[in-house]
Length: 111
Length: 116
Image 1: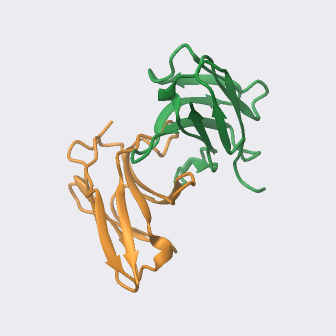
Image 2: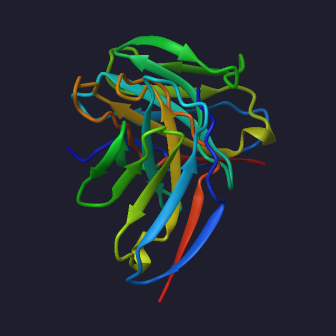
């Protein structure tokens, strides 16, 4: 499974757009890119999944360049409640199976 | 449906004791997963079921660990002869794979195990 690299932590302020980039240089042809969010003392929660170009939902956008060796999760106008750990995962997640989590990015949103 | 539920939410046990955790997945989901998470780390996969069949087990799942999903609904995870290193959050998740739709796992709140 492709290994991912993302910043350990990031700081932001309320109302700002936050972009978290994940590197996955050895992503396989059939791999999807998925992001999960985890608040303290809770299980992770699915945010978004994509294969190429751009995906947008009501929570976030996911940008994937043509070579797919990296991806960027974009959170528009963050609030204090977006303070959480964000995980980037790469794998055959369109077909089910186990999730492989890295260390994630701890996002801290300040007032 | 209220989502994935886990019981108990917290468990404190003495080293050497056996513990059992229960997970109730979302009712129509056919896959159920167990993960373990220690402080500051992402969740680590332990095992998963498709209905009642256990399809994959991690090397992390030593012979002291056993998981069952007897009727393809709820699941139990048992740890025998607990060790201090077993202290962690045990997470359960469920999913329903639908071709053409984004695949996601729905996680429960976890059971926090403390072995003293």
